[in-house]
Image (tube, rainbow, N blue to C red):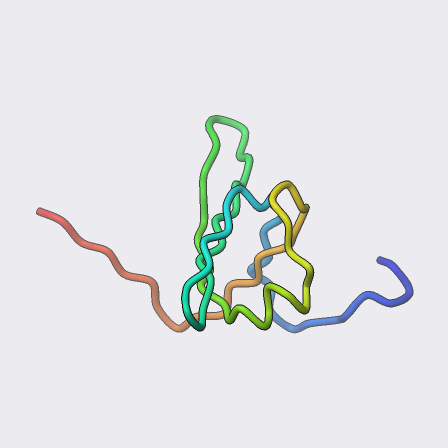
Length: 77
């Protein structure tokens, strides 16, 4: 861990690379490619445009996604 690294309690952390950034009026859709062993997987985060600028996010940047949610649900018959 770097000496400036932030410690965080969330345990659901996944490393990946920024694949795409689509800016809207207030928020941006950031697609992150997560490379599992079998096939690539993408995750999407919707964050403010200010956060994209503060983090200086660029396509190809290595990032850590931090998932802190009470539920993630999808169903289909």
